[in-house]
Amino acid sequence: MNEELQRLMDEVSEWQHKTFHTVECVNISRHLEKEAKELTEAIEIHNEKGTVETLWNMEEEMADCLILLVSCAKKAGFDSGRLLSAAYSKLHINKRRKWGEQNEDGTFTHIE
Image 1: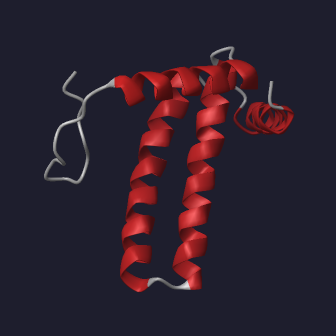
Image 2 (image 1 turned 180 degrees about the vertical axis):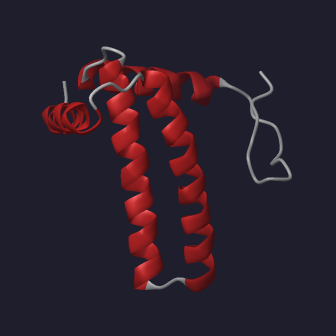
């Protein structure tokens, strides 16, 4: 188990419970969708302007996404070890897949 990641998960969970009382994993995931869109916008702005301020904004949006992701994982009963294990397992699966050409939106889709 990663102690630093677990500490973040625990601290976020404690703060979230005190601040919002009852939050379900699905609600956290919906909020993560919104923050991911904000991250995309922040990256686009940084790519265009490339300033310290836009880099800082991008960093903040990444942090928002990470906080929500670990919060959802904790709410679902995962600890840091399980979350990291799942990430490495999925990475291994993705490495074995065949990937198509880049889509119009810049993303890639696996074909096998």
